Length: 260
Image (cartoon, one colour):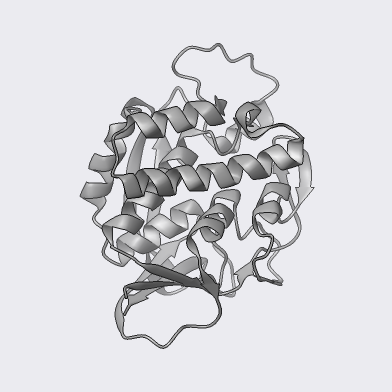
């Protein structure tokens, strides 16, 4: 049985997950071709490259937003100050229903479509729970930004391309401290992240940073069947996906181990 072990020693995010799977042999050309089915290529470009994180070679996966789009980093501060017209360039706020329609219209394989929709639903439900609105009325800020759509759908594409049948993960470090999100300054983990990690073993960490993002938490909640240390397995491939930040004492990367 083809098993994926997620060694989340530095947390997990969508781009770390895709980077790690590419590093472990997922095909970036297939990823790009499949993602083009969403028909939003005018809004982003993909980049992946080998980078060093504290001495370990990792794959860094990035979604570069085109000039007319604000990346999700900027939407936090600017959400309420700019009056975004609803022209086709500004997709900072896509509703849950918009995203479901986008994914269903793309013509992915049933497996990829189901996985992507499950991950989005997980995030939508968590956001809805926190903001007190039903799923149908959830609008995505961070998550609805194009990069998160690409991260989530891309994760589903790479995951199924590798033919993985079972997923096991280490406990999840979430980090500590505070972060600024579009509603103000919040404790780490962000409320939606914590909501999605109900029932999942988390691990304390001394790093003052958001180690696990909402997308990372949703991937864990949807894909992982079991938590613990590395299982008895015959290892086939190993991949390292780089996170954006660099820490002095340990590599900010997600390690994946694929085997039988």
